[in-house]
Image (cartoon, rainbow, N blue to C red; front, side, top):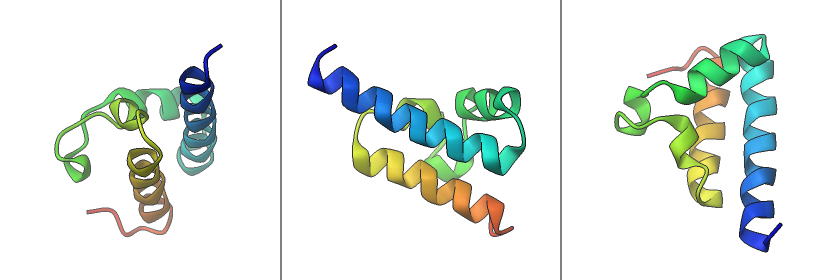
Length: 71
């Protein structure tokens, strides 16, 4: 595994864990990650895993959802 692949995998693991905790199941988390999201400019959260800053944006959104501040 290359460094880039390892970093991507680590980001995915972290975001999937956060989504699972926020949404209640891995199935719901996987569906949410694959669904276009208005708060991400219509993009899929899954497509944001290419950089740390984009993954952080997804994590922040999950935090907002968890606290009822979704917009």
